[in-house]
Every structure is written in C-alpha cells, then in structure tokens.
Length: 276
Image (cartoon, rainbow, N blue to C red; front, side):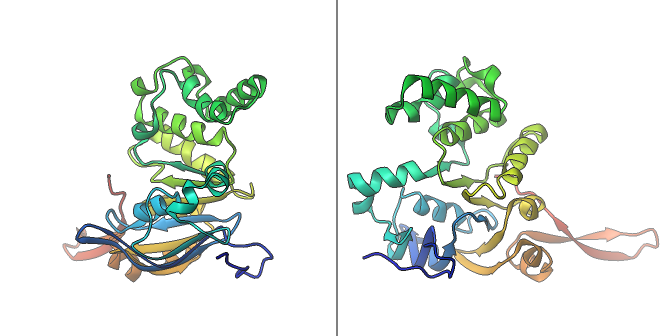
C-alpha cells in the first residue's frame, strides 16, 4: 500500500518513519521512532554515540528493516521484498546514496578512478559519459591527483572524499551521510563541511548523522535529537542549540568546574566533539 501526500507541499515525503522499533538481539536500538524527511531538506540526526542515529540511517538505506513499525520511501513501503524487486529496488538504489562513517567498508577497487567508475559501469553508462562524469566528480572533491592511487593507502580524509565521490558520481537525489566529519584532519573536515553548506538549495535531500554541535547550524535545515533510541526533540538548529538543558540531558554538552582568579568555583557548559 502506498502513502498519500502529508506535508502540504504537493510532494510526498522522501521518508516517513512510523512507530519504528529495531533490536540488536537483546539491545533495543530504536524505540517507537517517528519522523518525516521532506524533499530538498538538509536533515541532521543529532545524538551522542549509541543513541540510535546510525541504525536509523541503515534502515533508511534499506540495509536492515524494523522489527516493528513501517518506513515509507516516497509513499511506498521500504521493505526487504520491495528492495529485492527489480522495479522498486533499482529505482531506490539509483536515487539514494549512503556514505558510511568508516569509508573502508565501501572501498574495494584497485584505484580511486576504478572506485568512482564502479557505479556508472554497473549502470552501463556510455564510456564517454563515464569518463566525463568521473573527471567532474574527482575535480569537485579535489582528488583528481589521487585517481591512480590505491584507496586503501590514503589518509582517512582522502578515503572519505573518495567514498563520497563514488556516491556523488551517480548524482543521487538523496544522500545519507554517517558522521561525515568524524576522525578527519582540519583541512579534510573543512572540505566536507563546505560541501554540506554548499548543498543548500541544490534540491538534494541530505540526511546527516553527527554529534558535533559546532557544525549543525551550518549544515541543517531540520534537526532531530536522539537519546537512547528515541527522538527527544525536533526543531530548527538554532532552537536546538539554544536549549542547554536538552543538550546536557542528551550528553551533547557538559559542564565543568573552573577556578577563577578570585578562587571561586563555577560551572560553565562546554560543547564537546566526541571521538568515535
């Protein structure tokens, strides 16, 4: 059964997550989760490690499926059966691209060029179009100089850019990015943030998981805060970032004691980047 429009824009939501629960054996990772992702929006799933946001991203990419509840993609049920069907499955994989937090799990080709060429070759694009699109994508990600290198011998920042390039070359409508700035050096982090900032108004729907509060306002239109498998807040980034009590409750902000010159002790909240 398909869904009908529910966002008042004349377009179906890209994703509707309805009362979803997901378990890893005895551990419940998601608990009765509900959210909607509308077309063209940059959505951030914000939460500390283990809050369930990466699990949801895997569900949105059709890599696993809820134990309870339903997920709809553009009005159609996102199920294992539909993913395996030629019609829905091929359309879904063409329209949706996922970049994992650890890029090494999706890099397998002998060179960067081959890595970026893999998707277009599977879709049997014309040779000239493949080479043109690869060249454009490598240049956009500033990795043209790496095209003959093995992806496995690159830095973490370079690997993430290659993984992203291998997805972007197919020009997907929806991008799912799992902790895209985690474990990056400052230059690579800046490049990744620039890409996310420049995506505003591109028409692409981008869902990003992060626990880095410093970048949320720049890369998000909508923000969902995760805590222990539930969404505990949903609002614009500025509203979320101004709610100190919420950020403390969800382990995204911590208060430390400071000794002032007078000898007095005070606590001040601080933003923290949590290493994965």
